[in-house]
Image (cartoon, rainbow, N blue to C red; front, side, top):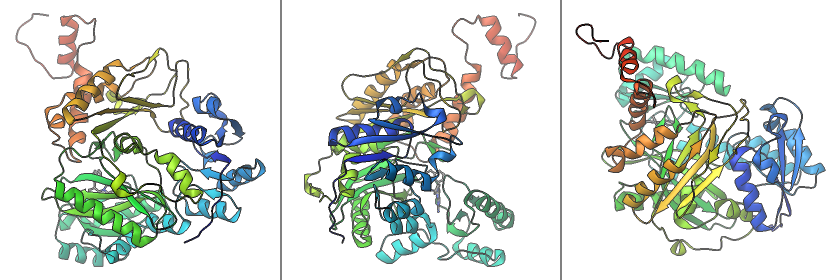
Length: 487
Ligand code: MV4
């Protein structure tokens, strides 16, 4: 492998919000000057206030974060040696990583080749299979002919799932229960894939019912040293948006866990992958493990791993990019206690969880032992409407599962955000749920729970509402009838 060592003294952050602030903090601790590029809509961002240097990018508030030629140009003219892409935006653009390379700028992440490989869900699945990683039975190449695809689905046996080769976020994905709905589902998946990913390639797999979504965090240097940092249980998600992430997974038998780690570590070593990375697995009701995809970026939920291992993933990611050797061995990593991350979104459960943008009024944040808050907002801040609705991440830690539930309840209760609707009430309801507390949940948990919660929140009496008003609202919704004329 490349034996180049180059110190980074100035790093450009090609991102926004809480992750931009997280990267600034890592830079400060490493003695690196942080440079933030920001849109015209992000002038008042807390990360813009805290960066060492800021550059405003003129243009569409979203497009400026995606225009990689311009970002590389800005990095060069401002003498930055490196760019950290964060998550989302350009973080998984092989072209961006290549453009950095060409211009002598260190891309803080894996090689363009590895990014490209794992962007292709079919090619990466076949590559992993070759290495001995268990994958789900399905088509090894894109299927174009619909009759052919249907024949393969018959062979696999229903239910099957159709997925987009360059997909993500559940788009271009269709579960097919029976042969007669295959054609319609296939056409719909293809149009969606073409529309969102500019490529209509699809593949077909056996559908795994009620899986848990477990991912393994890996860190690897340029010299073949690979360490795993445990798993995260990301089963609590709604419509392919993760809502809560937990490390370690509360109900994973020791043998399955060991097997996940072995598979992940071996695969990363064999691939010659460098930087941080996450292997996503489905674990079915029989504890069978299936690799589904790999994320070649730092993830939103990285703090739960940092919390139980004490490893600063952003700092190590930067040092690996500088050509440093991983300075710890697998045996030196200790996993301590449980961590849970709650993604706090500006959204209204009464309006189908639609984004709820506005200006933050009073802002009272939780703290104390075992509490970490990665927040991109503050009192008086107007949340710009152009970006996604996640405003902060609350991470709690305790030595055992029971303790971390108590910690979560306390920290969620302390958190008060005025001026916008948030999903804090949903989080408070989840941590009170019996199945959640027992660690009994799969990817199906929240789709049901969130809908029931939304319905309940539309009918619950408001704090100062009288009984008559409450009952008449129930009747209007057809949720209650009464005999006679008592109102
Ligand atoms: C699956 C699956 C069941 N069987 N593949 C969803 C997003 C994409 N990364 C893969 N996904 C799934 N693939 C087979 N063969 C179920 C899901 C899935 C899911 C996966 C992870 C987390 C949440 C999920 C919610 C619904 C479906």
